[in-house]
Image 1: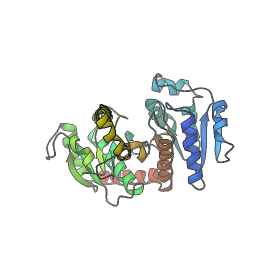
Image 2: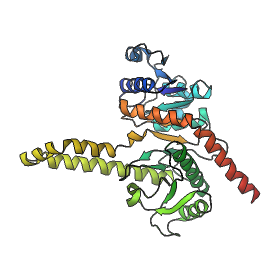
Image 3: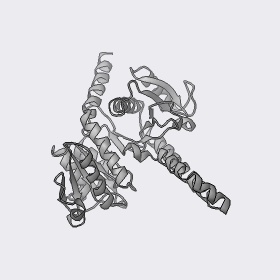
Image 4: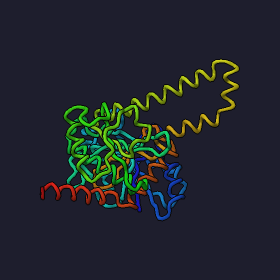
Length: 334
């Protein structure tokens, strides 16, 4: 198995990207990784590991670049060359911590969609209080969505959670403003009916305040709402820890108390770190594409690689294609 990685994407590239890749090839048997980026910076970090190949380029897509234009004009950018490795069949999956919009554009224009998928979904796994986590999609690949798109998200998410995370009969929820059937706008009302009438294990509407309570293994919504919800969760967690730090360092008494619970606080912070589950998958593309967080360290990169490995091993792309095909056939018959 070979995975292509944009070694120049993200805040900590290429050092943390290469370190995470080195850790991964040491852990997983028969895994090779192609690192794409500035060889002058990458080669000293590779340490002559035969499982790591470097494709040299100095061109990079930055966070300031307009995604579609950058993918079309910067043909030798590390992110574009990474996607080409997958398109040419030289890599089974790809990972980037770089420009999210550019990765989505490269996924669509270069790698392509699964037949029958209208729109891919950006899908991170977020932590829950019981530490089981839930898959959340879409969180920004598409601002607008139709009911059939949300049904496809539910199918893709359920397939991923079942085969990669080992949940036998994933519970699927629909993000809404209330739990009662009939709540919401036209999109959520129609989506509710479509998912309810499918063969998925649909548990109904889920309110945003209950997202981290573990009520569902998969939660679907449109990309606009999902992105707002994701960033609200991120911002709340960051601010809570910031306030906690301020409180625990305010006086000698609180500093002493903090020293007693230091390890417990680190474990709590780790439980809220969704990079422990890997990156955000771009589901619906014809090969596994993972968006790692822009601030990913080596541990986060390793987890993103682990996620990609499991997606390839479990043939998630073809399993999604089969499920979507089954739905299309039933719709034609009806």
